Amino acid sequence: MLSSIFRTGFMALATISLIASLALAVEPSSTTRGASSQSIYEKPYITGSGNGVAVGGYIDMEFEWPENGTSTFDQHRFIPFITGHISDRVTVSAEIEFEHGGNPEKDGEVKLEYAALDFAMSRGFNFRGGVILSPLGSFNLLHDSPLNDLTARPVVSRQLMPSTLSESGMGVFGTYDVGEEGELDYQVYLVNGFNEGVIKDDTSLRVRGGRGSQKADNNDNKAFTGRMGYSPRLGTTLGASVHTGAYDADGDHNLTIAAMDARTTFGPLELQGELATVSADVDLTATPGVAESQLGGYAQANYHILHDTLMQGSVVTLVARGDWVDYDTDMDGDSHTGLTLGANFRPTEETVFKLDYNWAWTTPVGGEKGDAEGRFFFSFASYF
Image: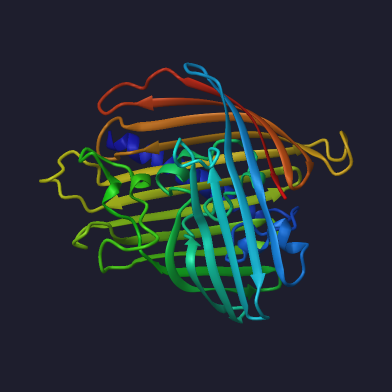
């Protein structure tokens, strides 16, 4: 079992390292740097608005047809954005999320996903406070559906680094030049952190269920989260991030999530991936059998073709992604493996139509890997 864990972890680390090595070796072919502390200000509705108040957002609609279930349409997300430039130094931004139709009395949801005030002091040191996007991995910072080439999010980004992870807190961020082309970007915050919901039914560790309150912390120990991102050139970003703090009411048990991410482009090919580990202090007397460590990751390749062929400004992208999560690295089973293949069409950079198919294999605790369960998706997403 241990050899299997080490082999899986080694393969994941090798994948991230390969992407990082290619990132440092190839010439740039993109005009962006990926996830950063400024990502919130790089959305189309802001870049074209000038000063004052800007209003925009995105829509995300899906048709899902599971192999062993009922097909359905899902108005998954409608997200209005508001940004106000109060002065040259003060900016207030917000995102309001309407999920699954937005009716809480049925199965919808309405919540404040992001609401923060930024006070700019210098390029390298600035204040941010409010409901922030925690900089845990790059996907949480770049989770908007129009940005992503597949319909469903990576499992590791939903479960171990539970996107969208929005938390009440305050901290600082900034960017520094490194050499002639490079940039070093950082974000560090103190936040309320996770709560006891990370322990599901006293039987399993499930981080997503413990996303904390934006109103009140359940203990006096603030959690720390931060990310350091290095971009050696346009189109390439390497990152390391962490989230650590007490999750129980007494403040005696800590949960720590550490992650690495990499993204690079060369020619028409784009590579990206993330690797995450979870370590939890667990009272095994009160909750025997609950996992103390988890591991997961994904690797994805996007190949862009037919630029300006179908219509002016359009592009087609072929996508392949493999992802996996081991929910308990100390025992056999309790794991997920997935493969997704897809293609999408962008008539413009801001709008995308996606067609993809996902296979998922689940291994129960102490059991054998089950047969693949398939899901077909057709979806569209667009900024406005």
